Amino acid sequence: MGILEKMRLDGKKAFVTGGARGIGLSIACALAEAGADIAIADLDEEAANRAAEEIQRAAGRKTLAVKTDVTRPESVDAMIAAILKSFGRIDAAFCNAGVCMNIPAAEMTLEDWNKVLAVNLTGVFLTAQAAGRVMIEQGGGSIITTASMSAHIVNTPQPQCSYNASKAGVVQLTKSLAVEWALKNVRVNSISPGYIGTDLTLNSPALAPLIEKWNAAAPLKRLGKPEELQAIAVYLAGDASSFTTGSDFVIDGAFTCV
Image 1 (cartoon, one colour):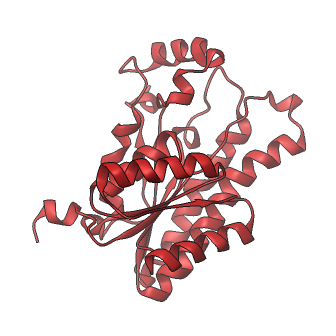
Image 2 (tube, rainbow, N blue to C red):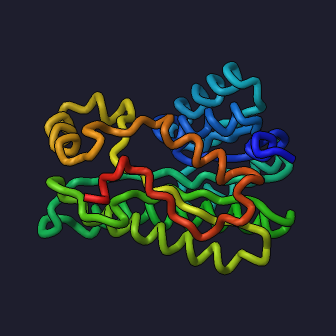
């Protein structure tokens, strides 16, 4: 089989959490274009339905929208049950849902801290765990988590200690699952994006001055684009990456190099 054939995802079934917009939607579109059927899992059911319909029209793949709260085990279990009922199996899971709160550490409440950790770290664990159980039983699969360059640096000038800590946890969780499940043929890898110009980021007046500072500090002098994360996700989801597990891929335009 040639390399281009290995990059195809024909016949594979995948889900993307936080898939209704931003990075999640971009990755879902890429996986579908490569041939996979896609389940969009998101807390915003209306947006998830729109995303699923958009992907179905554009790529002609079977799609599913599932309202999911990644912080609640019962909601994650219901998501898995709905996907298995519709698709029959899960070959790739993109555990991507996340939030960020810019609050100075001295002023942060425990509720604020717990909210970020619940979505960004516990949510990744619950969805990866649920996908892993299915993949172990069926004989294999690929799990991709969304970490961040914030797992490797302390972002400035915004105060985001809870986000940074949660994303560092995602990287180590990913490595831990990769080792545990290596002989189960379940691969687990993370991607660590830099600053990405999603619609939400670009259209936020509060972020405009921060974007100027980020771009000034960036070697490429710009934000990344959501579609610039698509190739690594397609690679990790498919058979071309059969020897790749426990890795964290920093895609940040060299931001963490300076």
